[in-house]
Image (cartoon, rainbow, N blue to C red; front, side, top):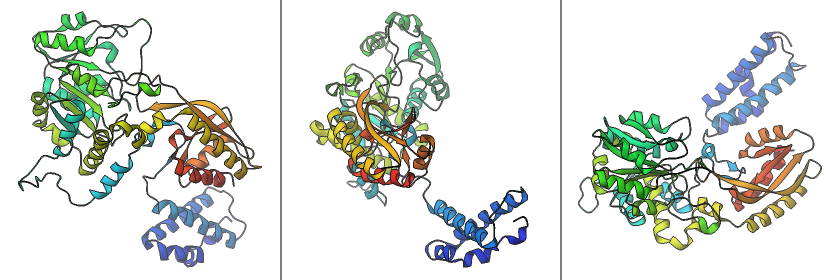
Length: 464
């Protein structure tokens, strides 16, 4: 095939049975656009001198198949549910925290009209933050609370309100990069505050802050290095020490916790992560943290602290630019109620905490049963076995934590493991997994048990 005349017309393709039935299920403009795009691709192949099908009939069949595939891609949502088999609990690329059932239901309920900024008692305009402020105060012990769209915005708003045009003192060892190339010094510069670095990368003392305090100082800042650890010859100023210094000089102390845990995870073998309650009790005037990391809720930046400072932030015009919407508020309120109403069993009710605290023996049991079923499904197409491994917390939280797990390892026999990984990622539903030393590694820590059949089917299709 070497001339454009062999190409079927748009109308001819639309009349083909395999395409005509698409017109019954999908908007005509979508199907027509898919036909035109596919014909344009074949026209480009001819122009480039590439070989085509052996006959006009086979070309038509190839175009029909391409159109069907193109339409399927066009009508599929761009944002899709994914099976996360990587074992990274807070996977930033996959949406970080999995919402609990109560939060997901709350989002659906609030899809219509709601009393976002209406006080139902008085009939007058109310505050959108009222839905969560009392809950946050109860859970953290703080005097006031405010919620914005993410923690970077929370830090930006706090610094802009309390230190614009003035100096903020922070340890060099806490000048972190928070992901996506956003760095604490950049956020601080965007707020209009001037950064004053003290100490060294591995050691900072209270006296370093004291020597830097001057008439232009507005704030003492403590940043939790939630996404990395410096070990060995180190010294970090504790929050209590910084609070004492702040009281001595009449300066507010702000703590950016980043991951923002409300539960001490040490009973489950995880490293200590300062909880919001601990930092508030230590006397910090302002505390910022994320809603979609260890808290296990939606993406949000949460600010708690003294009413004087939080009140000033509420009056900052920037607050309107970074405010959260009704769906985020609904999900956050439902998540916070889980902490308040089910404190003793909250680790079993919120997916993030459940995945972090699941016993290694339970993961071994599930992996063994899954590998046995998968081995039968993929008989003759792949080798399947289990092996010990580690999961990760992810999301810039608990960077040194290694969570013991049992991995299901798959070695395809007829394709490369890299090709299998691509097929799974492009499948429906998409599956994301790790590859190492010729094996596809599946970690069921991050796969809900009721999704295991879908994962089995996806692997079966990928190796069909």
